[in-house]
Amino acid sequence: MAKHLALAFSLCLLVLFHGCLASRRQTQFSQQNECMLNRIQAREPDNRIETEAGRIESWDYNQDDFQCAGVAVQKITIENNGLHLPSYVNTPRLVYVVRGMGHLGMVLPGCPETFEETEQSVEEQRQSQGQQGRRQQIIRREGQMGQQGQQESYDQLDRHQKVRRVREGDVIAIPAGVTCWSYNDANEPLVFVSLLDMSNQHNQLDRIPRRFYLAGNPQDEFTQQGQSPRIRRQQGKSRHQMQGNNNNVFSGFDTQLLADALNIDQQTAQQLQGMNDNRPQIVRVQGRLDFIQPPESMREERQIQGTQMQGQQGQYEENGMEELFCHMKMRQNIGRPTMADVFSPQAGRISTLNAFTMPILRRLRLSAERGFFYNNAIYSPHWNLNAHEVYYVIRGSARVQVVNDNGDCILDDQVRQGQLFIVPQNHAVLQKAMSNGYEYIAFKTQDNAMINTMAGRTSVLRSLPDVVLANAYQMDRQQARNLKYNRQEIVALSSSRSAAMPQKS
Image 1 (cartoon, rainbow, N blue to C red):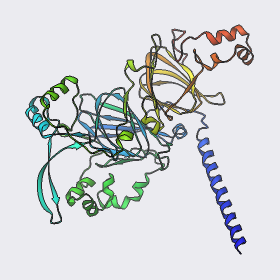
Image 2: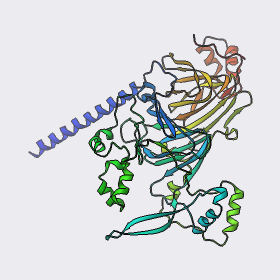
Image 3: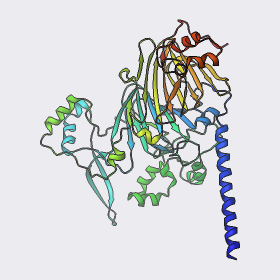
């Protein structure tokens, strides 16, 4: 009897193993088929949401090239005095500041509140309020204290996690599930381009981008295609109808339970849920947004230090996480010319950002590249060894061609400012700037993405013996040597002709 049970159990395990293996192979085959691309297009945003203080634009992530790369992309524009409400997404993100300057706050779980005000700093801010504006304030609250519900007013000095000053050229790395908000205190629009890596191992959901807002009544940013409605909307449909169809995360909870959990009254809980709040994702701040921030110059810092020599610095408790995560570098500017990794006076420059220069990217498995090419300059034809690449054109235009494994040109177009195109892994790409130059930001789906060039001093042709080239391309050895050594540049190539590439007919 025991032998029969053991045999039956073994057969069940065998069937289960083969079933799982077949399912995994089918999934892998399905994902591989997503990259059997016959055509790629340079695309402009497919969806646009207007808000009271900005707009959110997104590309259709259901398109074949986006599905192959496993990414979604957004462009977020925040107008003067606009606040993009706190939210988090189910994937790691790389954000590039295309234009403007402002502030970005990131809430890292378990990390201390390292920005805090003191009574002395508050008093100084009050005295200088007429000239510099108030950056810090005493928050006056009325809380429900104790089981008797006695109301007591008290003064509390504010403290919060680090707020980063961001400006054009910055790349910001944001882990999956980390809450983020941004604010524009400048006179010009603040423009972000954001890559969401849906195929990343840190996304344990499906390949549908989801943004979870903690405030407001946001419109859905990703379902303009009508193919994959957000699951949480379906699950909470009846509750949203009961509570005014609010869409922030707090709105899904029972009001009384939420009030008990936060030790607040029901009215405050309803405000969290946005019962009467019809504002979408980006709201306009009344007055100015004041929060704690360090001095923006050494001179200002010395002045503060001189008046606080006798004061006590704020203290916070350590929690053991700081050295590993809380203090990791999250922002790096790659837009300045001094940050160039490749530079040619005749062709332009390229700046790269990877896990070696920004270790948090190793955790996110993402990297970025900023290119600035002069008139008619050429980005050496190349392929990415281990990553997909998503290009967003910041300024200018370029002629771009992408070739697949069959030798078919699946993209042959002139890309221009505001457009986006994807180059799948191992697909060869050739880019030539037009007469107005060419600037781009490229996001890559590996933390240490590598390319293999097809022209220039470090190219694959340069590394092959001349006799191999001669026999491979049916040419004599002198022609092969000319092919190898005609280009002395590495990646940024000057044009051998003053005219641009022939236009697509």
